[in-house]
Amino acid sequence: MKILYSPASPYSAKCRMAARHLGIELTEVKTDTNTAPAELTDNNPLGKIPVLIRDGEAPIYDSVAIMHFLDRKSGGKLYPKKDEKRTEAEVLEALCDGVMDCLLSIVYERRFRGEENAYQPWIDKQWAKVVKSLDHLEKNLPKTGKKLHGGHFALAAMIGYLDLRFNGQWAEGRPELASWPDIFAKKFYHYAEMKAAA
Ligand SMILES: N[C@@H](CCC(=O)N[C@@H](CS)C(=O)NCC(=O)O)C(=O)O
Image (cartoon, rainbow, N blue to C red; front, side, top):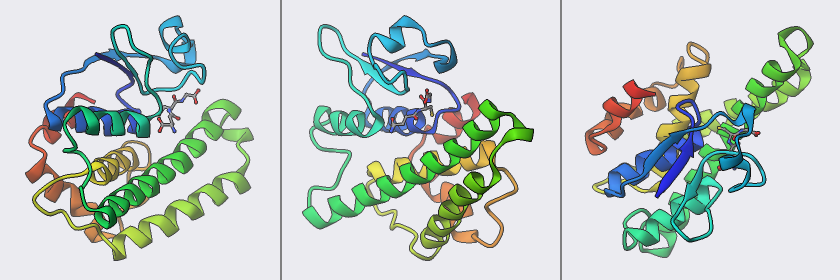
């Protein structure tokens, strides 16, 4: 199986980390969405990454569908079995993915319109959602028990993207959240190596 990804893509990072944690081997194919290569657009009409490509089977997108596929493939190791715990993990993933949506929207606004033409009220609106969500996470940091789940991988991917594109703009005043990757790294042994390669 291969995954179309880019090193900076947080949704891709979430899936790649989860697959690695579960021991599911994926061939990673670096993909530039800006050039819209046929391998991407033929497999995902939205032209977005990540996309999981399987031999002789339909491609899988988006990242949430890939995570649920990885969960089934691993015999249910990626999400908790108990209903309420599973819902908790899924909502954490939704929140972190939602923050990534806001951050990406800001990055794209600046990139495609140009810094000088970027529409500041839109950026502010997206950033306000990020602030509210990060404050919520700071006060309600998820438990990181024995087993990691999909929500944890989403949280790690979100923090990775904040560090990459919004370094120096989010960690101050949020010590719990800022130091959470240290807890995560103790349970996901490939974290440092994957971060360094990104
Ligand atoms: N909801 C999607 C979001 C995927 C997404 O927006 N990926 C970005 C890269 S991080 C992308 O492909 N952007 C290119 C585009 O929107 O054309 C998911 O969870 O996979």
